[in-house]
Amino acid sequence: MDEIGLFPLQLVLLPEELVPLHIFEPRYRELIGECIEQQTAFGLILEDGDGLRGIGTSATVVQVLERLPDGRLNIVVRGERRFRLVRETDGRSFRTGAIEWLPDGDGQPDAASVDALLSAFRSTAAAAEAEVEEPAPDDPGLSWRIAAQVDLGVDAKQELLEARDEAERVDRLTALLAEAERSIRWRSEARERAQTNGKVRHPPDAPPG
Image (cartoon, rainbow, N blue to C red; front, side, top):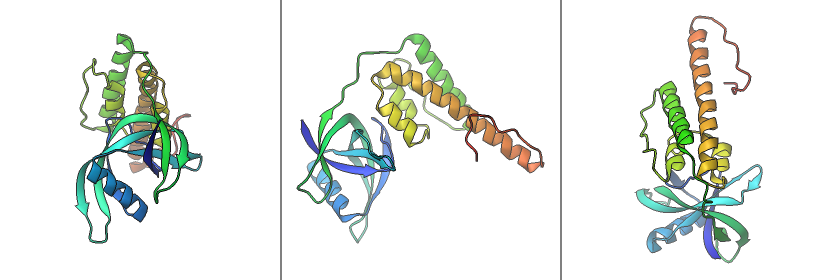
């Protein structure tokens, strides 16, 4: 069992995902400063109205964008390994925890599931008119690489983070992308109708907006 500095935030970091962070609290400036100096990882874990989640992702600082005169930092971190928080520990100014690393299970998606995921990814990108980088079908981190390019929201990303294996993640991500595409297309139609005083019926599963 390892001990790691914890950085609870209202966001979810996936393995292989790059995320910019603004570090301003003194205790987390201390944590990130140590990680930069010692080239070690910290644990980024979701904390929201439901409390601190049980599974997070280790993160390393890959770039310091800016060091401000008052000690604040703008950095870029990369998600690495999933972990399970066993218990919080104490003794430091920042939060720490005893963790167990969480390896993936053996389940792997079949070719049809991979094809369905890549198709959903293309359709969602087309609906959003976004330029994306499509991973190779045999990429062992296929689900992570695709999920990192789509704004799925924290609950959906946490669900992916907690999935048992790549097969489960691929199936769930395919469904999430289909939902995202439907929402994007509905919003686009709503904007077009609004410009002409037309009306559009809200789809049952799409969020209001």
